[in-house]
Length: 575
Image (cartoon, rainbow, N blue to C red; front, side):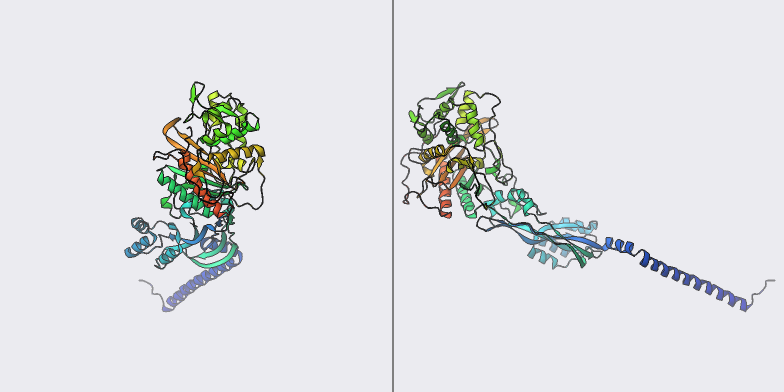
């Protein structure tokens, strides 16, 4: 028979169980309080650090890039406020209509955006960088969860096409990619600031904390470029490009006394404010980075060496009535000239006379004048991508034909920038000026290459080139005396000269009585039938020089009446 438990025992058991449970709960509470006390007192720093790692971040405060200014203080490149639009797909909540609105507002692919939102994988995706401020505001006004903006800057170029290749561009990270933006990156770039913030789980900033570092903005850079002259040069190159259906055209304008670059223009170009128009070919600064055979523009430099060494005088006479044979190859002039002086040989651009004079000179005489004039060396202008060109060395003795052709600008290659710089020798009475694309704050000294007397003798010859009977009367400018030289050369294609493809170039200075400006122009592959530099490049030079002299307010040194028309055909130079 089963024993029966008394009611008092049952009550005692229930009380005992309750006490045990209460004791356990109280003990757990005491343990929890103790643990909290321990963590707050002994592990506080560790816990705060762990919390900060999860919600506290250091964000960059963008620093704007330094401005590019022209020599007169006009803005050429400025940084304007923009925004990067960012998507956190894991937090994003969008209706199909909102996806469409966002895609249209940012001009991005809707299918790509829809795929990002649907996949829910990405925490941080740039939907678009450097969005103009007003467009970014319109996008953020949609109030789409998971879409945020970050402040940044975008570059704006006020001159557009006209200065595209010389100024260059920056990328979405605000780093220079081409041109002056690239070569002066360390000067123009700012250093972003840092600020501590607290972000929520969606990545939004909910509280701004300490300022860790102030942003350091980039330094403004004042250039030697004159935007008026640059536009003028670009406009005239465009006109020549279209008139002669050329492959391209370039021009360099220098201040002859300071070596400052006033303009470097190329056509065709691209719009740096619309990267869709930019290609590798259009971004190329041909006047600086491309080398070509200069042809007869080298004759005055060559003849200055012969004058310096007393081998010839301006009045020395040579027979140019027949072709000259050197190393089994003929050197000829377009039209036989008879017996002419050295000055006349420069005026009509005689290859035969130059080659005959070269035969009386040492290899080192020619090599020395070319190297001292800056060929085979970097010009050091501050523009990126400068070419050295190519100049034959002296390790082996030159063949007579090699020496003869070098006298009239074949067998070497140079850039248009190098050519313009070399002519500062004649503009500055024998001094070669150092180039710069920065505005100079103090005078600089040139390097003596030839004597003052020789430089002045050559300048007289160069002025004859632009007179009636010379190869470039179309280079003249009303009110000013002009001195310069034409160069027409076959293009070298795959190691051989192309019979119907030419470089037409002209380089000169004004006012010839006291030169202040040197301009070099080159038209690449004119294809309308006219190709002599006196017909193609000289008129471009004349218009650029006329405007430049006017912009610089330089006083005339010749009668101001309009120039008489050229009465005889332009003298065709030997090619």
